[in-house]
Length: 199
Image 1: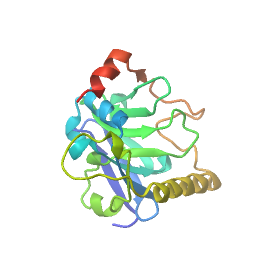
Image 2: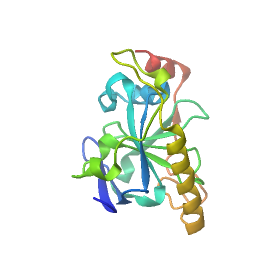
Image 3: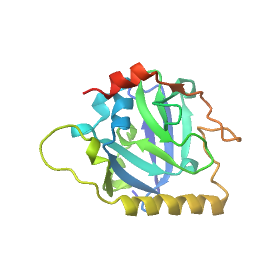
Image 4: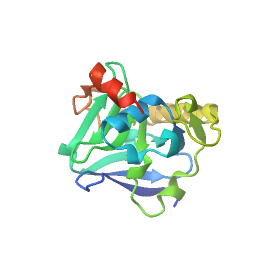
């Protein structure tokens, strides 16, 4: 499925989006074990989206490939701290959807792969090329080691530059033309964050 489109759907189906032109070179498939990704999922009651030992399965690509098809009114956003990542989710069912930087000036979006419902999605996004932040993994059998960080980082930077050259760096449905998020994020209180980081 090279250069194909993938549907993105929340758990209850009220929010729908699409990734276009998914194939080799258009994104990077990563597994992140950081405590923040786990805390965000836990706060939303979406622990079932995490892989064993707390892994978040994420596909990094460019926002110009993303379009919101239906249910935009259900789009919500949270931040674990005032300077944390923007963590977008479907407020209708608390499904984690996307991660972005605080402003839309860099062509970067991480898509939660459990939301990719299309047939052939696994083949389209390819294998995991990087495993990161394994020091934050939950206890469990086996040994986890970080790998592929430089390769994934290079791919992300390359896409940022290409989007800039193409003039599509600011094509982002999650931010307006000024680079301001279309939904005001809610920042977790310290107590909420503490509760979400316990396991």
